[in-house]
Structure formats: structure tokens, C-alpha cells
Image 1 (cartoon, one colour):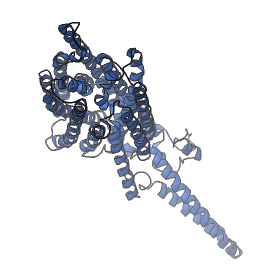
Image 2 (image 1 turned 90 degrees about the vertical axis):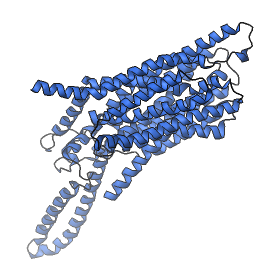
Image 3 (image 1 turned 180 degrees about the horizontal axis):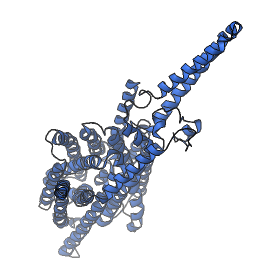
Image 4 (image 1 turned 30 degrees about the vertical axis):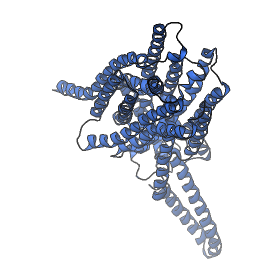
Amino acid sequence: MEAREQYTNTLSYLATCVSMLCGGTTSLFATYGSSFGEVLGFTQYETNLVASLGDYAHYMSAPLFGYLSTRMGPTRVVQAAGVLMFGGYVGLSYAFGYFSSPARDAHHYVAMMSMLFAFVGVGSKAAYMASMATTARNFKQSRHSGIALGIPLSLYGLSTFVFSTVKAGWFESDATPSRYLAFMAVVSGAVHVVASRFVRLKDDPRDAAAMAAAARRRASVSAAAAAKEMAGVGGVLDADGGAGTAQLEMVEMKETRRRRTTVSSPSINDAAMSDEDTDAAAAAGGISASTLEGNESAPFSDKALKDGGKAPARGSSDGASPAAAAGAAHGQQSAIGRFRRDPVAWALLLGLICFSGPGLAFVNNCGSMVRAMAHRTALTAEQVGRYKDRIVATQSFFSFAARLLVGYLSDVWRTRLRLPRAGLLVLAAALMVYAQGFAARISRLEDLYPLAVLVGSAMGAVFTLAPTITAETWGADNFGVCWGVITLGPAIGGHVCNLIFGSSWDDGQQHIAAAAGPGAPQDQLHCDNRCFVPAFLTTVRISYLGLLFFTAVLCLPRASLLLRRRRAD
């Protein structure tokens, strides 16, 4: 039984990793984002509006999917991710295939394309929240929770690298991204549907209930067989003074004892669950703790099993009290209440707004930056497309490497050096400040490579540290809701900074056109670094605010502790 549980947990972890690898594809927007202008005739502001609304949907849906992952389990959420991503990519593929030349009234299609990309973003976040909530709960007692969370997070960052490399190898010569988006639809839908069959919570009360019911059925069959056998013996012994009846009663007593021992054994109810874990599992599934522990006074009925393992309320005649479940539910609510009142939570939220906004402005627009800087080179259109894919892949690869490395380093930082993980958060924010300042000084196409390395490393580090800090500070059982609220930060920051970039780009293009005069040919009215440098001069100031808020995340817990000690004295 223990080997089977270990095999199931390993399959579940691998399934979450595969789901994350195919779920983090929203950053692929940079590889086909320029096609919104070239094929659909969108302005840069309209293109960034599509990207920012997709990011908004991606991050704003986090609390919903965090709650659903906690209450319903991860299986249905991962299935929903596959359906949403399939629908979004199929719609985008059809839209690009339908138009063969720029549309005259392109602004009529902005809302439709934004909605389709929002489906992709929402599906991506559903896969992310289900996988992260599952991993956080399954590894909440592990000393290596940082690396356990870091591996699927790193694969989420690697997703863009994998699929941008596929695009560069198989689809780069296409005039539109229609075939590529159809490929993404099939892969995303199929992988998430398959992965949903294996994603499981280690302490899922519904699994424990099903195993307990199966054990009870086996015990009942054994008792019936033994009773039938002894009934035949009893018929012979009745002639000698009714000894058969006495032996039959003894067999029934032994079977009752064995049934109690079997149902309450650790092999059936997730080996070595503590009382605290049992109560938490009972609260999550609506089952009393005594039922999970195999208490015979509160057995499961067939109807309860059909309803997903939820036992109906019972009176004193059954001997089951909902006090344990109510206490666990109250504990969870009080933890979420502390989260809402905790200044550290607000500092982390504001820090993510000011940190991720500038980072997402580069991630979503690095393809346009390549196109702007490539006009000073002799690269062909196909070479420019490959260069754009390599920049996106570079950013994704270093995001993956940073997530994996920081996941391990944060465990060492925390367990061996006894330092708070938020210290690494401050270092990552400082790296983002430097990256935004570097972006404001770009003068050559080759400068985009080190910029992609800097932004990818900073983003990967923060999006590994922040969820780990959330799980440790407010509890792994509350991770889905708490982290869902905190990830609203990237939605707000990404939307604001994307619009800043789009507005700056269109203003720069208008200035270039005005300087060239009304009779200048269109092929000479190309944007260069003058179109995006003003945007990065703004985002570098925003990233400084992110550094300040992350410093507050580091300092506030210690300051609160010192204040409590002073009041106690």
C-alpha cells in the first residue's frame, strides 16, 4: 500500500510538472504579437491592449482558481485549463487565417482578439493555480519545499523557450501564425486533459473515504463468507446442545473487531496523518475527522460516497460530531483573516505590482523591439523573425534557470543560513531595477540579449520566491486563496506598463513621421529605440518602488517582533 501511494504521488507530481510546462505559454505573445499589426492592421497601442487584457484575465482569475483548487481539488481545474486554452488558441488561429491582408477597420476586432487571448490567459492561470496548490499541500511538511515548488515553476518559465524553439524550427516561414496557433491549441488541450487524470492531493479526503469504503466492503464480504461457513457447522453442532449458535456469535464479534482495526489502520487513511492534518482534510472535504480516522460510529453510506465523500449531518445516535470539521474551517477562515490584515501581504502585493509591470512590458514587447532595432541591420524578414524567437527563448530559458536555482538556494538560505527568503526577493528586485535602466540605454540590436537575460532571471527568481513565502507565511492549506489574491499584482502592473509602452511607441512613430514630412515614403517611417526608450525611463522608476516594497516585506516581520517584545517589556 505504501509503495502504491508513493507511485501515485510521483505520478501526480510529474503530471503537475507537465501541466506547468504546457501552461506557461502566455509569454509566447511576443513571438506572434507583431502579426497583429502586419496581418490585422492593429496599432502598437491596440496590440498592447490585447496583451494587457490577456494578462489581466490571466492574473485576475487567480483567486477564483485558487479557491476552486482548494475546495474541488485540482482535477476539474486542470481539465478546465485544457478546454480554455484550446478554445483561445483555436479562435486566434482562425482569426489570423481568415485575414490575408491588413483589415481596414481593425479596431472592430480588438475586443474579439482580446477575448480570445484572455481565454488563453485564464486557462494558463487555471493550470498554474491547480499545480501550485497541489504541490504546496503535498510538500507542506518537507524540508525541501522550495525546490519542490521551484521545479514546476521553472518548467512554467521554460514553456516559452520550448514552444518558441518549435516555432522557429517548424513555423517561421509561414506568412501568418495561424498554423502555429492551431498546433498550440491541440498540444495545450490534449496535455491538460491527460494530466488531469493523474493530479491528486496527498491528503485528499475523498481518496481516503473511497479507500475506507472499499476496506469496509471487503470486511463485510469476509464476514458473510465466514458466517455462511459457520452456519453449516452450526447445523451439525445444534444437535449437541446449540454450540453452533454460540460459535457463530463469536465469529461475528471477531469480524467486528477486525473491521474496526482495518478501517482505522494507517494503511487505509494516508499513512501517518496527524490529528491536525486529518482535521484540515476533513474541513476541505466536508467530512468529520472521526470518519476519516475510521471511527465505526460514523460510517460512510453509499449515498455519501456518491456525493463525493461528504457525510451527511448525524445526530447523537450515530456518535459523529462536526466539531472537528468546524474547528478546522474556523482555523482556515481566521488564517485568511490574518492574511487580509497583515501589512506584509499588502507590501508583497504592491511589490509585485511595481516589479512585474516593468518586466511584463519587456516580455510582451521584446518582439516589437527586435523589429524596431533590426531596421538598422541587413537582416531579412525571416532572419528578423528567427532573431525575435531567440530573444524570447533566451528570456524564457533564464527564467527557467533562475526558478530552479533560486528554489534550491532559497532552501539553503532558509535552513542552513537561517535567513529569511525575502532577502533574495530584494536582490531580485534590484536586478530588475538595473535591467530597466539598461533597457533605457539600448542602442544596438545585440543589446537585447543581455536585457533578456536580466529580465528573465529577475522574473524567474521573484515568481519562485513569492509563492514559497506565501505558503510559509499564511499556510499551505490557504495557499490557493492567498497566492491567488497576491497574483493580482502582475495583472495591474502589467496592464499599466503595457499601456505605457504602447502609448510611447505610437507617440514615437508619430514624431518620426512628422520629422520626415508628409511626402516621405512609408518604408522609411520605421520605429527605432526612440519609440520605446521613454517608456523604460518611466518603468525604471516604477521598479524602484517595487524594490522599496520588497524591502518592506523583509523588514516588517522583524519590526513587528521587536515591537511586540517592547510592549511585553
